Length: 67
Image 1 (cartoon, one colour):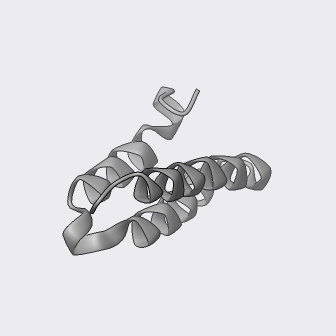
Image 2 (cartoon, rainbow, N blue to C red):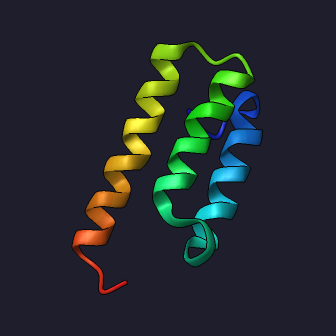
């Protein structure tokens, strides 16, 4: 689960940046999410999986919104 305590620092940073998307943008938020996951010791395969989940979520979200 991405909301497990072991991922909390990456999730909090990502959520903060997404909440302030006009400053950071989703692309940077997703990229830093991946980098922080790697930095805190998440296996690369799992970090990539989480990265692709959030990236695809944002792509889907943007195609259905007027942001």
